Structure formats: C-alpha cells, structure tokens
Length: 357
Image (tube, rainbow, N blue to C red; front, side, top):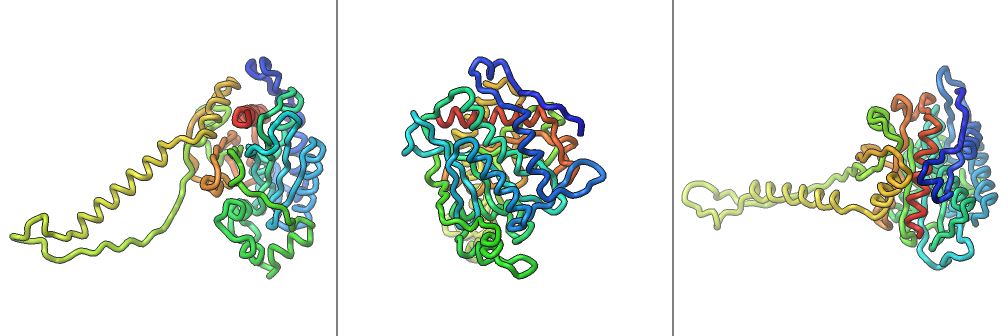
C-alpha cells in the first residue's frame, strides 16, 4: 500500500482556510488498523470485537486523541463515547451538532468501515480549530458501540440505545457466544460508563461511511450524499369485509375487503413518497458542502443500515459515503484512495461547520 499522503485543499477550502490534513487523518486510521490486525493476502484486515482487549486499545487511543484536541470526553452505559468541543465564543447551552461512526469490525473486516467516519469527524474539528473557526453551537464527535453486531448479534446496538429504540439494561444483558454479557465485557475494559449521550439533545447528526458498493467509483465521484436509507418494517394488517358483492347489491352497500386493501396499499405508497420528499436540513447541508468544496458528488440511496438510521427519529440526520476501491467492504480488500478519504472528510467538515453556524 504505497500511498503517500498530502493535504486535500480545494480552492473553496483555501478561501476559508479550513484544511483537512490527509496526513493526520491517515495516521489516525492506520494506527487504529493495528488493533486486531490480521494477515491478509491482499489489503489490510482487522478483527475488533466489542469488549475485547483490542477494542480497549482502540477506544483508549480514540479517547486520547479526543483529549489531545481539547474535547471533553464522556462514556455512557453501553460504551458509546462522545467528545464535546465547546470553544469560547460558542453558546454552550445550544443544541450541539454531532458526527462520527464506530470503531468495531466484523471478523477479518476492513480498516475503513467505521474508523473513517470516526476519525474524519475528529479531523473535522481539528481543521476548524486550525482555521480559527468558532461554531455558534457545540460540536460532538461520537463513536457508537457494536455497530457490526459481530459479538452480541445485534447490529447498530449502541446507537439503538442512544436513539431510544432499545433499553440500556436489555442491551447490557445480551450475551456473546461465551455466555458473557455486554456489561461484563465493558466493565472488563473500563468502558461501562455512567454519562448520558442523548441524540434528542442534538441539533443534527452527520456520518461519513465507506460505500459498500461500486456506485461512486462507477460515477467517478469523490463523495456520495445519501438521500434515504432502506428501512424494513414487518406489519400484520387485517381488513374485514362481507361476502355480498355480486348481482344486485349496490356498490355503496358493499363492504369489499379487496377494495379497502387496495386503497390501504396506495396510502402506504403515498406516505412513503412523502417521507422521501421531506428533505432534511442535514442532507441539504451535505449537498451544499460538496458544492462548496468543489467535490464531485452524487446522490444515492443506501441499502445498508448504519447508525444514522437509529438517529433519524430523535434528530435531523445526514449520511455521506466515500468510495471504496472496487466496492469491497467487510473484507481486507476494503481500501480507499487516500485523496477520496480526504475529499469526503472535507465535505463532512464543511457540512458540520455549516450546521453549527
């Protein structure tokens, strides 16, 4: 992997003086990749399971890096980590803008899925600090627990608790294949906290994630702006009718279950289209940020579920994708072009700067 980092500076970024350091971002990601590193014939892989010693190492380094940047760190009951930046001049009581992702991996996974978004968020804060940008509201950098679900069987676990979809006590009682609970694993590594991380208090959330596909590389795009995430809900509906629909029964006297069912299906379709058309301000900010950064961007839907999906109810959300070479993901072959990483991180930082203004 003979990539040589350089700062990613677009004309728009130069005018504002807010520069993402590709070298600094790459250093963080590659340092994180060492935790749980596995041998691979091609690419770089890692296995980082929640509550393992490698998880502890990755978390401790992340907390150290947050502290180095002057962020105040807190850890909640299920091990979600947040660093808060509230520089002099911002309103400390204003609802913060948050961004981040996760640090865990699937077995023999890649090094970008999760850490790119987590460390790009931290780099975004550092870029604002370097440029002397003072946001109007606080900014938080967040890493969620057990996004992959590789150890406790439930993906996006940490964000589901934070987003109010799952009780923390129920999550902590989950057991892994060895019969050890999440609480016990987090206690063992020192990350069963008692702080609160509540997305309902956030003004917005934006996540950067590696694309799990080839749409961006095929389009030659630097970054993808996700307009919708696939949501799957199973419902059972009972529609009662009466068998009296032949011959001389007038239409207005009929109770036709099929007709009512057809109307119901069309209502569901219209409701889904209305939700898709209701563009969030965080999505618009991401699109504007891509234009401001002179980045080649494309809009797309995500078929994969990410932490962002759990946060759409309590706060305004946005999701960005960075291209993955050959579309590989959850594999040591998951590898980026470092320029693409820096370009997408620059768009992320610009979106958050705009939302926090």
